[in-house]
Image 1 (cartoon, rainbow, N blue to C red):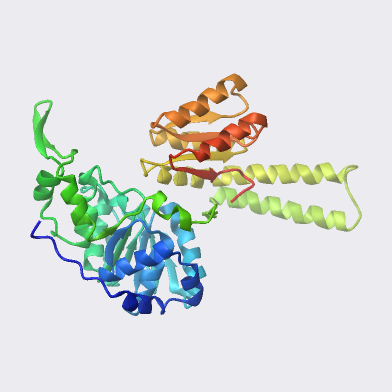
Image 2: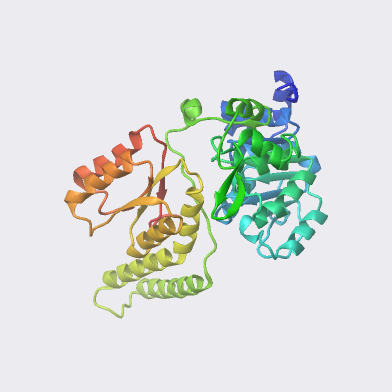
Length: 419
């Protein structure tokens, strides 16, 4: 352990002074554990991994704003939430300062938001354009997307991270029990600090030869010397468990996830809104083409809700798949329309995750058994629930009782009536 680099941290008063440059609204919003996370990042000169999330990363990036341009790499389903948070907490930013990369071309800007989905084998021109911008501050959200060494996005993004002066990697899925998945994230921040891949694998991944048929190859899926690895990681990574910060968190956190409306969905929605405006003008004039205008209004509202369910089904599927990247997470998904329930089910099946589904077709006698399965089986990670079927009588109490268990459970609402 003699090779371990010592971490020099700023004195508390110095760190506190650095936080004073943050916008006043942002300073007031930070909770104590978030302040500690920002101070840790500053002690690492802006190169660290952490379980902080958006607001901490924005704070650190803002402190280094004189070094921008800033690149933020995120899952496609989180592009718009990041833009909303930036606009909310950094009042200095003007609308033209944020560039959302929509395709494999690029436009220079003070802040660039890039989705992982564009980092494919044919994205070399995009990466070359990004490299020419010489980003000095890079934030990588859900950095476990870089866990596979030979993936195209890893090969394209790691050099961009390594060339930046400041780099912040955020993840809710620290693979501390699978060291193989950590190496590229570590090497992106501190190249060769933990040695070459071969050296790292032999020391921390229990690397050994195995035969797969007639082929002999390295098996690096194991773990070894974990205590040493965790100690070394503590110098570059801040990690917190829910129990450590629970007393500082509000009782409930709501988040709205905006998304792009598909062209077909946008066309349908536009037609329905035109029909709505026409109907409202007709009712305001006192002339109605039907004997019961209330039925006509409610029929149109119902149709519009159904259309929004269809329109956002793809975005909801992407978001559920992103949540399932965190292999420790269990969560509930509430939906109303059948098309949305089916989309949620397809997402879980495509991600090869265990799930239960409770809708009106499930007999009451089977519902409690499914709840117990979700509670007790670690492999059953998602409960897909009809708002109507899971919100009646004693079953409603059972469902909400699931949230009081020690296992971390998130709620994702996918109903057409909610964002």
